[in-house]
Figure 1 (cartoon, rainbow, N blue to C red):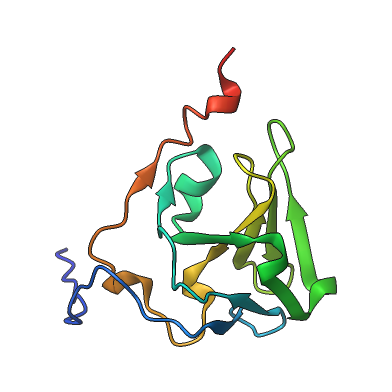
Figure 2: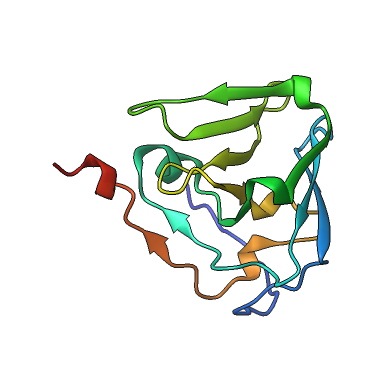
Length: 140
């Protein structure tokens, strides 16, 4: 059996334009949030740690006070592993990863840019991959 795939014909870009305060949500809409992005998406990236490699999300970061849960905080489920420093949040209803408090800098949230309203992360041409598999905090 041969499987044929059709790929999007959207042009690839290096940058995605966002609103200075951009709304986002999980798939079911139970968790809604805003992110303060006056300078756009700063350094969108992927990570190859065991968690990020499996979820495949493209993320960007903001200060903790620049991400606000406006609805559905009670639906957020927390997952932690290894050093339990990072705090990964998912919608308990639809399972979508929305954001996490970063291990490398706990003063920042990384958020799933695919959850931002009107944003298609697949148009990004160059998404660097950070080496979370060899995280600096894991070295003696």
